[in-house]
Amino acid sequence: MEIRQPIITFMGHIDHGKTSLQDYIRQSALVKAEAGSITQHIGSSDIPLDTIKKICGKLLDALKLEFTIPGLLFIDTPGHAAFTNLRRRGGNLADIVILVVDINEGIMPQTLECVEILNQYKTPFIIALNKIDLLSGWQKKDSFLIQNISSQAESIQQILDTKLYEIVGKLSELGFNAERFDRVEDHTKQIAIVPTSAATGEGMPELLMVLTGLAQKFMEQNLKIDTKGNAKGTVLEIKEEKGLGKTLDVIVYDGSLNQSDVIVIGTLSEPIVTKVKALLEPSPLADIRDKKTKFQHVKGVSAAAGVKIFAPELENAVAGMPLRSCLANEAQKVKEEVKKEVEEVIIETDKQGIVVKADSLGSLEALIKLLKEKNIDVKRGSIGNISKKDISEAQISREKDHLHSVVLGFNVSLMSDVKALNVKVITNNVIYKLIEDFEKWQEEERKKIEGKEIEFLVRPCKMQIMKGYIFRQSNPAVAGMDILAGNLKVNTPLMKKNGITITEAKSIQHEQENIEKAEKGKQVAVSMPKVMVGRQINEGDILYSAIPEEDFKKLKELKKYLAPEEIEILKEIAGIMREKNPVWGV
Image 1 (cartoon, rainbow, N blue to C red):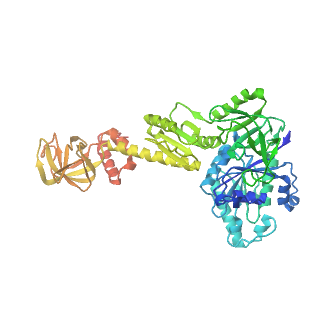
Image 2: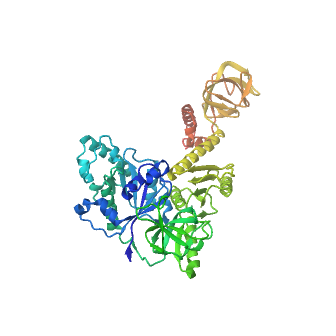
Image 3: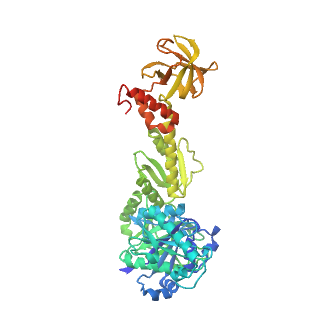
């Protein structure tokens, strides 16, 4: 058994410096080469032990730390999503995550996304509190970080502490205990925050020391692998390479992969069984994505390694899928295992729920985990852009529950030939924002449904028969009515102050026009059957809408849709009815 490099994934909000930190370590210029200085593709970089020792320098002597790991394997991510692509059965590929936070911007939407997902996968992480050199008045010093901080002006130290503890507070709200790395008492219970600058290199030795120290102290058993065993890996990206055709960028996290090995790769249907034609490995400190990176043909690689695979029949390969090597006579057995692993994530059920689409198997898994945590049912979950089949599934759900006629898409879009008729399509490239948008839509739809429901109930209304405005005494009685509060609708039953229902508003006229509803302040002519003016009703009488008890109970539930004056009348009506029946409407 040998100890492999820990797999380190960089996560964080866009432009907070994930690639810049790695660039400092690699002494490469990937940031400058990429569009808008933002990482465009998933990449891996092999960081040899000598590089770590060189950066840590005198800090090694001060702490007397001896390395047992052979180096580090860095995985860079576009934005925040690639962590989820780096999946393996029952967990995540990353041994430790470096969550990069811009000290001036603090916790941002994609940072929250990362923390949510890290919590889901129970992945240990440390925080690189980056861009300390941009703090107003910061002076670069060539000494250890703690000495650097102590030698800054008092006001700068206070700004640093304030910003750091704002992040500590935010993480505390999310259920995490964090502290500046030199103040951490227990690394199993506290998250270390290391102030850094990718521009000046300050904090980089300390970041690597915390990283390697954690890996060696708490993860050594997990890093032991059988280098002679069959390879286990995850597909990062599928690329077209000039002269080769389709290739796979893969992280091998266990065993060894050799040229001519039989490999099994997960897909959305039957797994691919093929043979490795060539293995291409980037030079040390190079990034697998860099167009200038020179690849060398290798006969084999051992975990942990980023490698480019050339093989036939890769057309249906998908990012985030498992990859296994095996003997030819074991291919069928491994194929079944891989298929089962994929089916654990791809959801297809008959039960009620929403349709979910994502760009890779890992991000689909993360999205479904978060939805389940919120008790949101998923009927169908798959990979790729939103298709006609997805819309059809959501339309079927609509027949049973309008609130489930939804397709959620993470990092995907609606296919150009598809129309989302009677189906709500919500897409976003931040998982928690996607779920937030969905919950907001559901709440708005519930309000609409409840709003419609309230229209069928007898609403609270209080009115007075106007003196001198009796147009007909009976059959039906027609009288001028002053609406004191609420709304009077046609066919509303009416009662007197004694709680006895005596008639209804058969029709309402305003300025000789028939109307369906009269609001507070209007004076209207109301036609009332079964009563005679002078007997059951008189000029000056106060009348109320006679609300049935069941309607009253529903109105109490939906009172957020009632005006304050309607709520007051509702209380008046309840008071009248409870004089005869103390438990009316309770």
